[in-house]
Length: 571
Image (cartoon, rainbow, N blue to C red; front, side):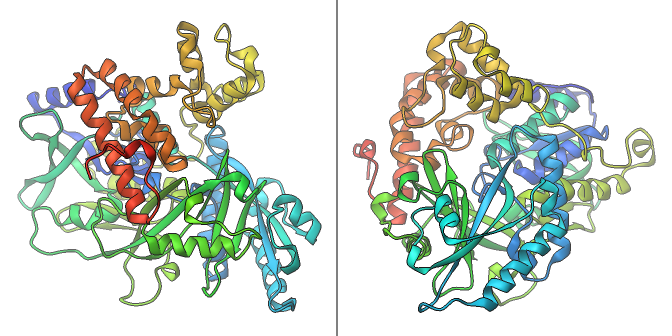
């Protein structure tokens, strides 16, 4: 459809015009996580007239609550799933090329501990074999091979490791990303560069049908009095753990294809762990390991991998989850961490494809599956963040095969995303290298320019120009964190943020890093939203209160001290 807009009001006007003119889109994609955004980009870049619809905020589910890694998955190799690791590492390389501002190489330390004072040579040999397999499967594409480190070298990377139990370590390389920003960037690329329509705060509540065949969707949109009806040649469900709910619309039976697995992370001050690079540490009395990842002035630790039996809409970190992760990290550092050290938490649900009624979720496959129901609904399930592009390609391949011949004749049959740069990739290197000299009259220092470049790529020039117009926008939101005031305004004005939670959980993820700092900023962020969106004081205050209440509930459920600024929240 050509270049488009990333503006909610303009999208609603376009959809209303389509309804008046009784025109149909080619494809509607349900679900604004990384998979849905990937499907929308793949479809739109092939020339399909595409709508991406999300009932909440983009990336508000699992796609902002992952381990924030772009990796092959060393443990999947140990489980024998060589093909999955190979495919994931190939996708990692594509993402590094297509989104260099968002996907960064990250070294990992794999410490080897003695047990009862004895060195397990068999374990060390097995780990070394896994390292070589990882390199050969595709890890070496990053440009570096793994290394074996002695005790002193390992302690140089993470001095808090217990030297008396440390026998050495392996060093290998993977990559990291801001998962919510990656999702947002994929969606913006689909919209701005390829004409996809993107609509958040819009829930699909039913299907339009031609006989038994699905021919569109019925959408409840925040701000509209009546449901919006959108006709489409194909409908795709990319709703993650909510896929069964979507497939069950207008039907009596529950498809029962998803087994949600909860993954929890905790954040602590970096100086409590002092890991210069990421680490993979074993969980005592379990057959799992967790990641320990540096994150600016914080380090995050995770993840858990357990069945989730509760509501899907708002999974939370529990006291048991906290105990598990503290036990994991405290088994690998000299000075134990406590609940008082935890500054943030998050919990997400993996949409694992149900393959058996028993067994650990950690052992279930992370492969994806595309299914087509009798009524034409295409559903993509399973997979992982790293392989979202491949998942999208397979999904749109299935869509294209089902399109009417005249539609197939005007679109690209094959995916075009393997070498498709994401928004911000162009101009990133020059801006990052240029530092303050690239920032014109903004007054921004090198570290601030580098921070913006690493989050927005070449589009950071827009934020720099905003700071030139108002120097106050170049100030940090919080002294201990790199985020700038301009990022809040940019999120509301250009990234469809519609609440304090949208801003402080996903656009500027302070809630995950430092809950106390986030609640302190709630009123300020609500003020920006009010000024940009035309809210009155009452609505701004209510939105800030809702955010504080959500953070307070996070802390309560996890058995953690409440942030001081939530003292006035109704309990």
